[in-house]
Structures are given as structure tokens and as C-alpha cells.
Amino acid sequence: MPNVVLSSRLTNNDSVFLQEWIKPSVRPYYLKNEKTKFWPEQRELVTDLLEHDIIESAFQTALNPAPQRFVRIVKFHRVNDYTVYATIRDSTALILCYFTVDCVLDYETINNDRITLNTLNTLFVIGNVTLQFWNHRECKLWFNQDFPGLRMVPVLKIEKARMFDRDQISSNVQFEWVYDTLHG
Image (spheres, rainbow, N blue to C red):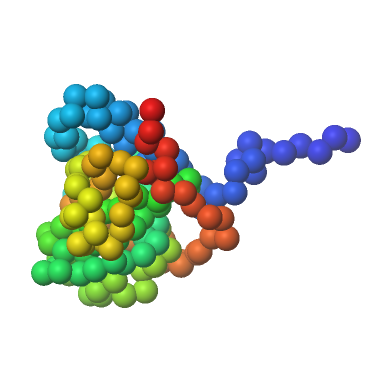
């Protein structure tokens, strides 16, 4: 009898909910803006989360998953006035982001924990995400990162975040920055 390999086993995902969405979402806006040399923010790159009870919301998301909503926090770069600057990833790519003051306060009130406490590699559901384009000086200041091949650096502004799975599963896979794939 021949071996059967399920399509879900062809890629090494650490969660069935964590799918590729960063590259396909960010790249078209970057390429369009690079041509026009105008860098407006893109609102609702990811739509808002439902305003239900946390358990109900997580359960609802599990039943009807939208792949663009799941991320893992890979690194915290800095915290300044309750704004948290971090690197997140989907199943294939890394991107810089920041969690707004309202997002952090909402998370910490609901979970009675700091957003930076034991959340590295934790699976989050995010919502109300805006794609912004930052200059190199801002990225160096807030993230201590530089991407010299880019004119502007895409950064995600996250206004809603809910912990979906508290397991801190790290991956042996080396993820690439979304910035390495943005050149035409």
C-alpha cells in the first residue's frame, strides 16, 4: 500500500491556526506605494475582533478561523508609555509591529498580566490592524532594526490582541523577514 501524505503535513506548521498572511497582505501595498512614492497607511489590514466574552470569542475564532488573525510574538524590543514594540510572525515571515496603549491596557485588564510576561511564542488572535510605513530612523529608534534595502519599512499597528493559546511553542525553523521579499 503506498504511503499517503496529507497536504497539512507538507509544511511544518507549529499550529493549524497559524497560516501565511503577512507577505500576501503587505507586499502589494508596498509595491504600489513604492511606485507612487506616497506612503499612506492601510487601515483594516486585519479587521476588528468580535466584542464577545473572551472565551466565547476564542471559541468562535476556533470554529470560524480567518488565517490572517493569528500570530506569534517572537521578540519584544521596547516598551514606552504602555506602547509595546515587538516582532511577530505568521507561519512563514517576521514583521515589526507595535501594540497600542489601548490594546495593552485592554489585554492587561482582561488577563490580569503584563502583555510582556510569558507571552513569547504564544499564539495570539489580532484585530484592527493598520499597515504603516516608517522611515529608517524611526525603526532604529523604536526597534533597533535597520533594513537598508527599503525606502520605507512596513510596520503593523495592532489595536486588539487576545491570547488564543498559552503554550509557548518555539520553532526550529528560521523565519525570514517580510522585508526580504518586498523588492519587485
